[in-house]
Image (cartoon, rainbow, N blue to C red; front, side, top):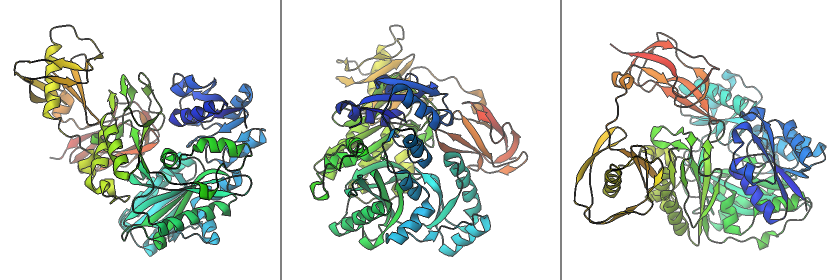
Length: 623
């Protein structure tokens, strides 16, 4: 067994690997950027090494710095986590060449599965069913457009080196193909350094089914059943579960055997996931499940597999990397109950899911379930990395029980002032169609307006806010005073005007008892309800004269990089038209016109780095 491991990653996956390493008596080494100097994964490691500035390309993506850190600390092995360099064959080769143990698949397997077009060709040769599409070398717009036209719309453009939904666009008609291709290629080049794409037929009612596989150095490969990752937004997974709802024994046998066949085709070793797309228009049928790609690493959603199989997948990674055989045979791996995972992001669903950054001055996670968190109270969510701050995982004997438990857990999340998607997650889990197992990858998109909108606070929340605000008026404001269990007994009924998001609301003080968790910060009372954080103020907001005048200023909602400007000065634009594209937290965000008008000024160019709140463009309203 290896004696020490360096985790070439950050956040919750680094902490997750350290947890198993400590249990197994393996010493731990963290690497960190300047932005992560005070991060929990740094504090939890036995040793930690600074490897560069905040930008990942200058720290976490620099292989030489990570290998140097392993040598300096005497680490015996390197675990890549997921993301960053985890599926980089050159990095794996460099680790091995340095005399270190690589906790991952062989570099040849990473190469074979790393490019989607080559992987598909290999799967066809191995007899694994794949979706129809174009995998060719000719990457000209004319050829790609012609292939898409021939396949028939809708089609999916996918970066061949992609993952995590980046470099992927659905195109519904020929007219939108060129623009979608340019955006896809740009995002792929920025994320993976490779703008090559493939074209696939888009399945109209798709489900995303993936199989956890594991191989050892002795030629054995097993599967640990399937996961359903169909609840996605912009091709990024939101809620995952195991096993897949509605999966028959026949369909399970087909998909798991195909996954094992795929792994054996590349002499796979270690943890991996074979991903399939299923046409769910007539349920999960064995003949309508096709290979999509293989992720040659541990997945973000691996905890649901751990919950239903009782297997610690990180422990298996350590054992296999140390040369041991797989701990269990295929017939010894069994399913137990149902598990679901929800990804808690620092983002604002009601504001177009824009990332939210800042200090987590209040951060309370639910009890009674597994929480894999990247942060703690007092930490800062920065714009430099992925906005996922925690994973919530619930396990129960039945899908209904696990779903109920997870929905309640999401509703109990308390975070301030950073915004999160906790309420959105709870609404997804509570939706009648989700409860019925009627899911596909379009589930969220078809219901987005209802799921993303912040509901009005309940009468009880208004009462709590009024009672707390009135009770705080007699003394000086105490920032972040926690009134957990605040109780007001037999208060006289009183109507109080409060302000929520700048608009007035009337709240009645209760005649009886009120007991709730609130925060008071300055002149605001924060009430947590159903995963949402409502900020009430007793004072009327000061009008924003620029906004009140509708001055047409297009401001940056977050720090980031302008990657494209889609208009020119003098152009006529319509409300909702994309004016420019901002890249932040590893995603592209389109900034749109707030009204019909004309572009009066462009204050930035493609390639510019911008701060939050700066003016990027100015419009004047149509006459």
